Image (tube, rainbow, N blue to C red; front, side):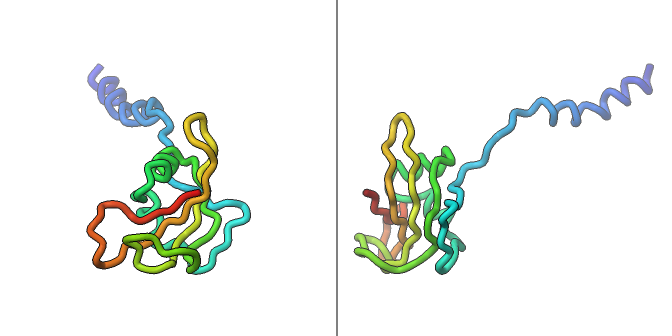
Length: 120
């Protein structure tokens, strides 16, 4: 009887692992037409913490696609370090229309919590 209890106790972690729900991780996937340019090092955090609530929501729900890695261009928004940004497309959902957004690095003097972002 004692050996049976030990065997059941040993199987308990396996049973618990099987019973856990499949939890998806947050994030944006790369689009099929993704252009690397200067890559994505450090950008996941910036996207997750963009100053646009739709970007943060799309990141949390994995309903966004990165179409271009870090590259310069466009208009530099307030708080951005430069025009360097990544381009992210937010997929249309029941509560949000499809948007193209540009996420930027913070300027050293910027004291805001979130990273500058522009969306259209």
